[in-house]
Amino acid sequence: MYKTIVIKAGDGGWGGPLTITPTEKCHTVLCVTGGGIEPVAQKIADMTGGVAVDGFKTTLPDDEVMVAVVDCGGTARCGVYPKKKIFTVNLMPVGQSGPLAQFIKPEIYVSAVKEKNISYADESQIAAAQPQVKGSATEKGPKTKEQAKEEIRKANEGKKEGLIVRIGKGVGAVVGKFFQAGRESIDMVIKNVLPFMAFTSTLLGIISVSGLGNVIANTISPLCSTLPGMVGISIVCALPFLSPILGPGAVIAQVVGTLLGSQFALGNIPAQYALPALFAIDAQVGGDFVPVGLSLGEAEPETIEMGVPAVLFSRLITGPIAVLIAFVFSIGMF
Image (cartoon, rainbow, N blue to C red; front, side, top):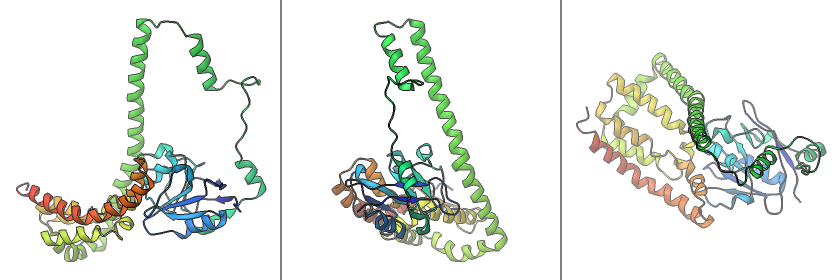
């Protein structure tokens, strides 16, 4: 028997609460975290009477996904499922972030969720979650935007637009697109670029004051100062059971990249190794996004089941090759 639950945001979280009611067709919890089925996903399945599946091992059509559980640090993955109108539970405290932030809305997304934030719904919550029946067009009340557009379209049927009207519409469409592009660019800078700059500055300050830079210079620097060392780093980062865990939010790449950047600036690592080092520490990037990307490409479930391990294992080959290619292209750059 299926039951309705309520999922609320945890400490420092955003969005929700989500009232979720499973159905005979839609009762699957899709866990896309790279580490098997998370306890939160399993609890959602147990309480609703549904079933939890690992998104890295299997997948299913969107209309059969009741909830998607992710652990995205603010990149594309946290917005992919809200864009598809699928309830999304993020284990990390992330709000409207990433290139798909406009699709992340509190009625379909909640973050920083722990097991304690999941509870059964009472009768009032179940009633509030039921879809409201819209009034017919003959009822009194204000017209909807769609009704008004339809009336205008019918009134203008058969009429030819003049040259001035067509020019005005064309100019308006171009200006509107540029204005929207500018607004989205500014929004992305405020929500993504500036916080990353603040994070980098803070991290560099901690490194300088704590003396962590000296420790890094004595441990990581020798590896990044030789080609075999960088190839070894890329292999470790690309291991199929590590890359989905290291990938979320690109946190590992950001932290290690910042640390290495300070060492390049201080001269502890030769500058000609900067390009291959970049590819060495980025071998895992996107490892957590493989099943989501295939789903966005509308791949068949069987394709995703085979494609995810194929892509992850291919990183063991392409990662070291990318380091070698970058090393060749870095010759003579500095």
